[in-house]
Length: 190
Image 1 (cartoon, rainbow, N blue to C red):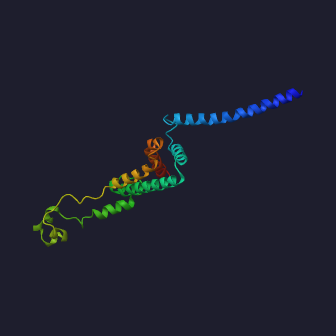
Image 2 (cartoon, helix red, strand yellow):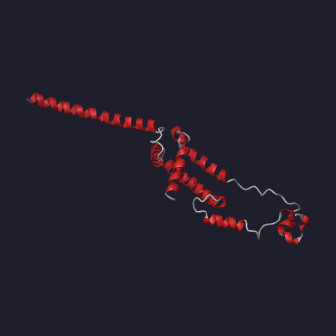
Image 3 (cartoon, rainbow, N blue to C red):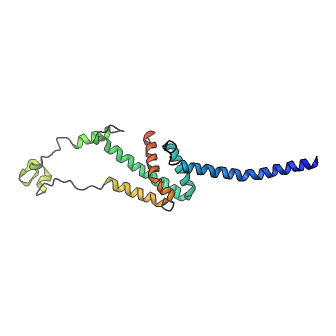
């Protein structure tokens, strides 16, 4: 009976040794399935799950300092996006978001009291045309060029991408990650 006790203990010890590689193989298999399913509709369409997967992958890949900076820059990008979205909503009249304040600003800007008739703004218009007409010799129908709102957004995006440029798997899904963060922010009004 001693030989069977020794044999069963050796088989249990050998089976415990085999379980360690199985758990590693199982986690590898789960990672493979997860990677393979990223492009399958229905599995990868859920923006919250994608956001969590990408965030976890980026956190594991980047150094702590880079991860913190990545999140700071991502937050700045999304803040800029939210400001540009809220400032343009009321003027365009799309009815999305909080356009009440922006719409009020559009009404003030386009009020008839401030309007100047372009032909009357020439040098022959006289003092009733206003101080701008008196100082300019001719009326220019094109307004002064303003800095493009997209240029700041592009700069923020480029600075954020600098942190992940050495990791192709993070660069590949970066735009989708940013879009998912905006979807979540819009969905949860943050």
